Image 1 (cartoon, rainbow, N blue to C red):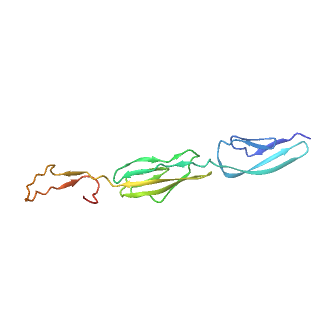
Image 2 (spheres, one colour):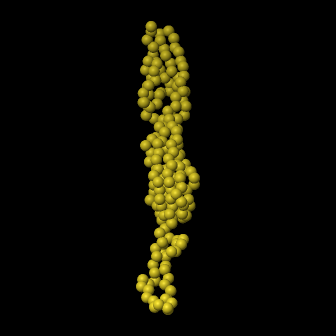
Image 3 (cartoon, helix red, strand yellow):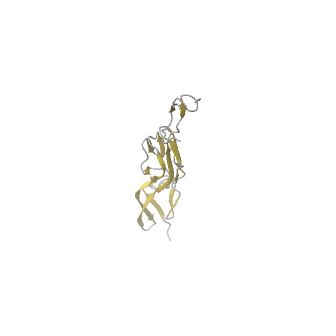
Length: 178
């Protein structure tokens, strides 16, 4: 049998090779658009060709997000989603965050302007290799009331009305007094 000579066009992506009719290796770059490669085998008598279509996707993302608890009208520390997978192309979140908070490129930050009972949110990370999602709990608490009486000592006499003492609040809204 005559020796075969192998060729491929265009060149394979970095990390892949053609040897003796076998494409092998570990790609080190993406090729997200399906690309047709022509493989040619030649011996001393003839030439034969065939084609293969190759796509190399980014590894799928693998994201996680921690639970978040923040306070109305206080700037939160930015919270970043972790990703142990491939580079994320697009991000999404559901449902929409409450007023004052934003989600950009896997980061939640801002200053919430409304309270929110514990609610489940899901973030999504997408790329050519797939989608990853992570659910977490978000709670936006009211600010703690800060109460201060105008006087700290009240002295009264039995049978005589006391002088009214006003309690001022410099913190979060008071929803009930007891």
